[in-house]
Image 1 (cartoon, helix red, strand yellow):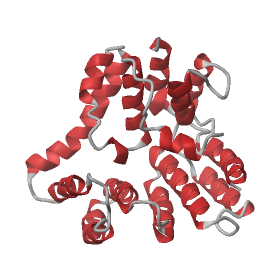
Image 2 (cartoon, rainbow, N blue to C red):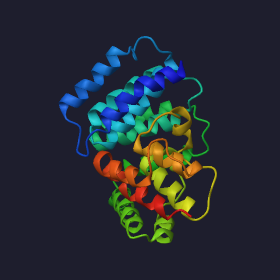
Image 3 (tube, one colour):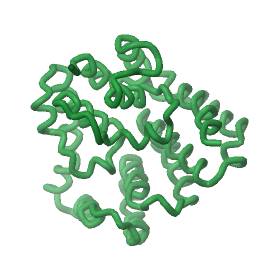
Length: 258
């Protein structure tokens, strides 16, 4: 069944990666049609539906469609698979909500605290303190939160200039298990450039969707094995330019792995 789930998700992922700009309404409607056509919301197990919703939410958030991403996070949240610790899912949802509507995110924060109360993740208290600071009235804290954007921008610029050691110094692994796939791939790639060959943060998504040839999964696959599922590195870089511009600097850096 899992291979079947992946096979019906592939055209959807290709569709979501089909443009370098934000997805338009027609593409979003088509994505919903694929979901209906293949019965993703009816014929699959809760775990399979949960995985599908999470992939869709990540992809839509990457392209700036926060309202749609939030709706799929909410679908995933309703399923609540027992083996999934609530911290990562709830934090991903809160991040998307915060970027979309800060007032709504602040209002949701009480429910967020209740939702992660059962989390066994060792980072729970640190993440909770982070959000308490975000929603405080401290300008210094708020500036620190927004400062992450400039930090991410610097990492991207340093990687583009092949200043990998400086970029790695900026990309702190603390809390990466709760970060988006782009941040994970940056750290994994920089670590691989420094000789690391095992234990990449992107591996979990690759395990869940081993047949995917989305740019992000191809990067992770190359970090692990030095191989790609579809063509070569030059073609992957060109695909990234057309489909996922936010990953071009990461895909390009793969050529420097010894």
